[in-house]
Image 1 (tube, helix red, strand yellow):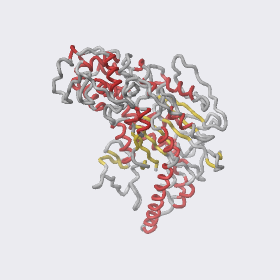
Image 2: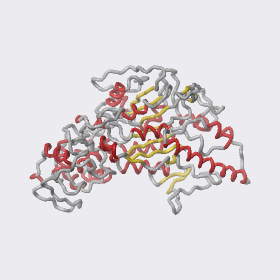
Image 3: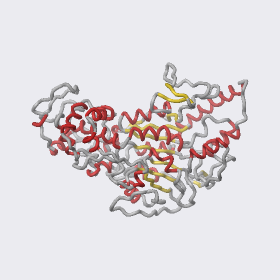
Image 4: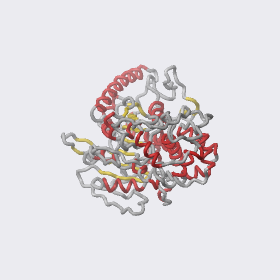
Amino acid sequence: LQHGGPGSVGGKKKKISSIVAVSDDEDDVLDSSESGADQALDLELLHEQYDLEESGNGDDDDDDDWGDGNELQSDSPFANDYHAPVMPTECIQALLLQGEWEEMLNAKKDRWRKKQSIIEAKRRKAPLHDDGNEEENKMEDGGDKNGGSGNKEVFQNEEGITRRPRVFIDGTLGGGGHSQAILEQLSAGDILISCDVDPEALATASKRLVEYLGTSDYILDYPVGYEKVMGQWEEGKPMFIPVQSNFRNLLSVLAKVRHPVTGNLLFGDRRKRQHHRENGINDGEDIVEFPYGANGMLLDLGVSSHQIDTGERGFAFMKDGPLDMRMSGSSNNSASLSYSASTLTAADICNEFDEGSIVSILRTYGDEPRAKRIASAIVASRPLYTTTDLVHAINSVTPTFARQRRAGLIATCARVFQALRIVVNEEDGALKEVLEEVAPAILCRSGSRHRSSKRQQDLENIHDGILAVLSYHSMEDKMAKRVIRDGKVDLFGSRRGGSGVLERDLYGNIIADDNDSYIGEESSLTPFEPLCKPRKATDEEIAVNSRARSATLRVAIRI
């Protein structure tokens, strides 16, 4: 919920004269004076209640993006109050490995080197020790036969240190707040690729970041009323490339993205090149600028502020609009549909799904205690076409005010709208794919983990691949946690063709079998290793940007 009204931040909580006590048990009967047809929806009263609520109202884990549509009040230098990014300092420093993040990574690499020396000693003592895979190691991670990168160009930073260009990915462009913060910290020759399914977000952010814009050719569907923005990038600045795509499709989409200046592929088809390397095939493919992969990926999950602020999109229950909730908008362009633009709307769910399916949706994705009664009210109120119709249906079985924090109308609407939005946009499936498949494949692997001592020195100058995930409710955070810890969202995994539950020891660690690792080496099932414990926003940031109160940042390194 984007709090911004008076009394929500820095003010004292005012008392509400009339409060109705409501139990979370669905079998309890509501006060007849506050429920049913006698309880009329008063939007002005609802707004007044919202203004009196504390900024921390609701469960920090589950009630993330409350669709009220109020503008954020922020003094952030990266974006205005309309596009205020959440935890920008922590995200950018983690991606670029600045400050304490660099110190944490160096300490982790020292531990890796000590462990690697022990592993090498055990390998030499093993009776079947074979050191004949040097050629295979040289080809690992997409490098050429000489262990070099396809990008031979190097740059000098302000300290005169020579380095190769870097490339970063913002998987959720939104209003462009995080992208702008990243671009302001990058050096000449670096590239930021930002993707989004919403063409309005891409067009708006391209206009705001026009000084960094290299090309807008990958925005497939310009919305009505927006003119195509021509890039004004100049040599000596980092480059911004917006791409219209769901982050679940980034592997196939980025395989076709080329450098606007050199014309070379940025990544190429990484799966195809890996297959060719394994089978010794050389088909003379195009030159690839970044064969090792991206240096960092940021995923700022949930709905963006600019989508909430537009009532016509249907995300905000405090504004009247159609029950749409598609992040890709209402476009039927065939090009945008090819990149997983949703055709299902929230109105389709409310008007066509049976009561049992709606109950399951509300319980699974909203943790809604009144799921059964609300589903019955939705079915009884059909047809529903607008957000106001849906709020009326919810209000018929939910009191406007309640003594318990999560029992009132605002908190209930937040959970219902959140659940519908997740189903409409398939957010759970998309997040699973990007964490399990896209991120491990697109990020470059650390040059200090699981390498032989001979190969390690050649890869020390390759940047480490950092994954930063910013989540706002428990479902997203649990998925990110499981992938970073186990490599899979589900507890069921596979071992090179076999399937079944991954065996664990007493402490929950995956037990490696003979096919998973060499002697003494850890299991290769996990592509990431956490760089630190989860981070929460500071009190100072929450005071100016209340959306950050439920944000959780997890940072991992590709190994």
